[in-house]
Amino acid sequence: MTRVVRHEQQAPPALARAGLLLPGLGHLLTGQAVHGIGMLLLTGVWLLATVSGFTRLGAVLTDPTTGRILPGAIVALVTWAGLAGALWFGAWRLVSPRQLDDEAFNSNREIFRRTLLRHTTGMLGAYGVAFLVLLVLLAPMIAPFDPNAVDTGPKAVGPSAMFWMGTDELGRDVWSRILFGGRISLSIGFIAVGLSATIGTAVGAVAAYFGGLVDRVLMFLVDVLLSLPRLVLLLTIVGLFRTQGALGILLIVVVLGVTSWMGIARIVRGEVLSLREREFVQAARALGYDAQRILFRHLIPNAMGPVMVHCSLAIGATMLAEASLSFLGLGVPPPIATWGVMVDDGRSPLRSAPWISIFPGMAIMIAVLSFNLLGDGLRDAMDPKLRGHQ
Image (cartoon, rainbow, N blue to C red; front, top):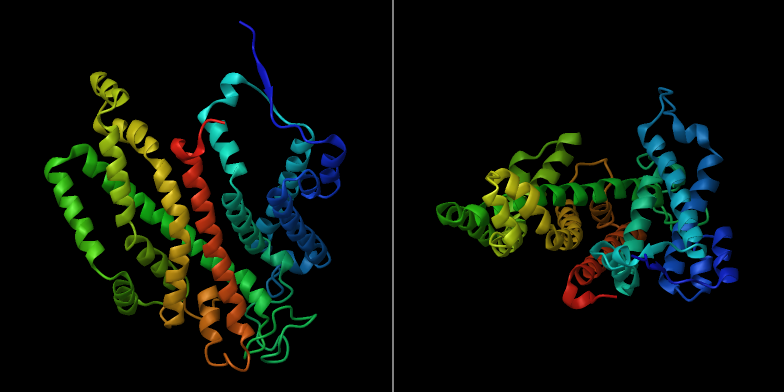
């Protein structure tokens, strides 16, 4: 049987090769505006880290007081190298597209990948998320000052060539605090949503698979928790068990995670209810597989598509919840910087120094918008009725 080979879309070679000099330029010149602008934006982050970080590599790598190598600096260097490889690989792939046979070309994975790459708003969200994540991972190389250092510059001075986003009332550099604060804000979003997804998936799958009394009890618990105002529940728990330092951050993550799993439980329950009577599940039962294997090997993996979409949307909502707690003075304890804490710091001098709140507020807005757009793209790419077979 002859193997049919299909090529991905071929770009004009002369224009595509421009991306080998500056990743993203080739995509932009060949009419792929979203990918071109997105890759150029990421290339700019890489160049900024290169110019800023390697000129002061010693100060970036080691703690000035102890002389020890900083783990965050190692993460930044690995991210820098990985980003360089990913950018130039993407530029090279435009020049030399992959060759796929018909089976691979029409596989669900390839259809999903092509649909997502062609989804304009979804890719805008993906590049926005990548931009923010790379900024915070490369923070030791990019940030010009210690985020918690007081009197780094004049107090409450506006944006300038030295202080790109100005300073706060204690003379701390706002740009540096946004970069390092994003680590905490994004980490809280990712970890809390991961925790809620784990709990919700387990509860929803068990309820749907076993049914009967188990289903009724678990769904009654979900209904009770959904009836409670989440913000009031968050304020009560955090107010009762508030701690300082790393334990304070852990408390915020756990509280945000355990108060947001109910929606995921309902989604997974609905998916598993539709899957448990399918032929492949009946075949697994006929072969004598136990409930644990059927749940973890057959049902839960096939129900994860909607969960992934929900999680991408929930990350932004979780970041907003953390920012709300911080604005109310019940979030991550100072002097640790998060975007919510920074917005709260700028509340008093809002009229005289609005940049203290505006820039972290814009970071929160961009993060939430990017995750929402990415969620829309994932939803359309995973839904056969919306994506079609291309």
